[in-house]
Image (tube, rainbow, N blue to C red; front, side):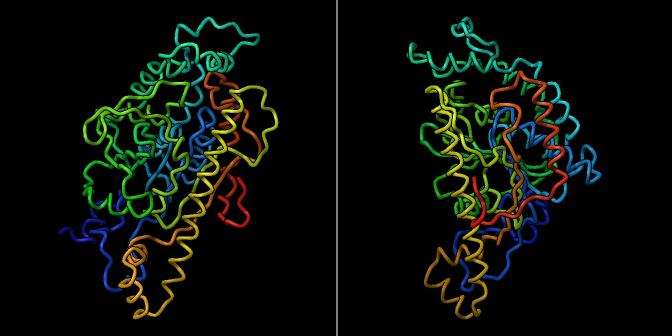
Length: 399
């Protein structure tokens, strides 16, 4: 049996498991359990991830942090889709490279239509328009699962994401398992950190569910696992990866099931900062089926986010209030309700805060070829980082 204190000292910033030995509650829940101080959650949103990058770059500059140093106060970063890619540069302390990537990505030609869709005539130029037209015609071919090539994105990841780069803090990101129709989470840990799987699974079972898969992204899986998190449905083909049991499974964008993986972060940290990429806004222009589908997808993402925020908020509130009970009464609660006792003992009381743009960002989700507006979006993130994160309050939060 591994000693809790020795494990936490060894793991340091890793802490993917908040000092868990098993899922059996003690006879009397301890009032406080050791956990990490702060987690950063990076949402998905395609090219609008430039906003996240601007915030990260600005936070590092304000803190006097250089490349190769941890971004304070964070000890873990959790992301989805483009947030997973941005999270890689945070976890590895590559702030300058993150800025360089977003200031040059427009020339990379990452979104390329498959040859059969390349010659689709459109009245206005632009890869996004062609993508939309291709999506309208995809039903004409029963063998197509996406309209864009995945290989340019994967090649870019191989150039920019070096598995040999040491992590300064753990990175966790979401993908969506189409076969099981549920989220799955990959993680990478700093070199030399050992985190027994039982610890990780015991911690995460409490907040993301007992059947959700959480596994390590080995060097062999790293790039394709990141690609899977970014594989927007209908745009890119699903990414084939061996599942936990070895069978090949199909994965798509982590944003389908967990666009802002708050559930993972709150398992581990007492403070969680979330960067969102959508303002409070209404969508009035829905001229075609593609726009209707996009609006429906965003509605789903917003509802999932609201649910995750609310669940985490009220769980923390309830734990905090229950811990005020006298020790003997609390012991009876743990005995009478093992599940409640486990939550009281294992899960930290977490405070949440968020940052998001005030209005619609200049670049769209698919605007990876629009360097001018990517730059403007990055600059908006830099400017917004001058303001503090907004504390989350369920009664006033609107999304």
